[in-house]
Length: 416
Image (cartoon, rainbow, N blue to C red; front, side):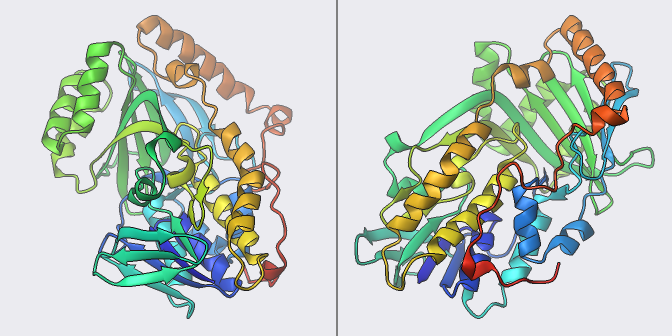
């Protein structure tokens, strides 16, 4: 089977690793000229950890851990309270045992695939046009002008996939705005910074957080849930504007917000990885169209609110590769794509059910709501220190969230 994958992030190379194991020949095109080192924290849970173990990459995952020791909230006076330290296996903390930067995870799966004789990377290359997608093959024109033909075309190019836009009509892709905006960047680490995920709730439905990384710097984040139509319009307009407009809006909204807001604002202009993100989900009733299929965020971006985007991407890549490995030589991929969606779609839909009140509670608009939330979270932090309560927390390393099916072509073991 000849497979073309658009996107060298996490889902695409993971899919390529397993497809190559089953004997497929894979080409991965990526618009960037090289892997980009940027990206904030992602974590893996359950079934994704099982997939990573099958790839023999757990030592690399542990090596590039962000060093985050847990999560803690910061009170209005700027003092930490309500700590949730990481406990091996249990997920009583918002910090995962397997916390890693997105750029580091992408580099790990790239290193695991780049030298395989059945996998070719083409950086600085995109798919200009899908010329045909029929029973015989899928034909494309690449950005260099080359015409190529494949048995399967995979859109793994992220939430705003250009390939998906070419191959699926707009009415088949639903964008769900969650009423939230997030801005990330990296700042210098100071001597009094710590190795916790520090979370400060400012009034006006805003949050400021600081997190450690393995490079001796700090990952900063502002989040906001606009409180009225005018504020929502300002943020929506900024998301469609340039960085200068976005920085101006952040200064307007977060000046005087308390804690370390001014430190973050002062460092913003120098950050090479400044990223302004509208929190929106992607939902599709069907992820495939003949010989074209979407995976990862291109198919089902769940938003960072769920904390499961990377897990869903990795697990989905394994499942898709597994179903494709069951095909007979030369068989159209329709049977495999149908089996993949039937098995995985219901699981993804459950994870995408994020009620509006969940992020609302974490973004209190008034001092009274903040006081109520912080008393609740303080009590919860005490409760989870009780051993029998902590024992009820799910184990991040077990795949009982979605038990992985076995595929005969993948049974060969590799060292962890």
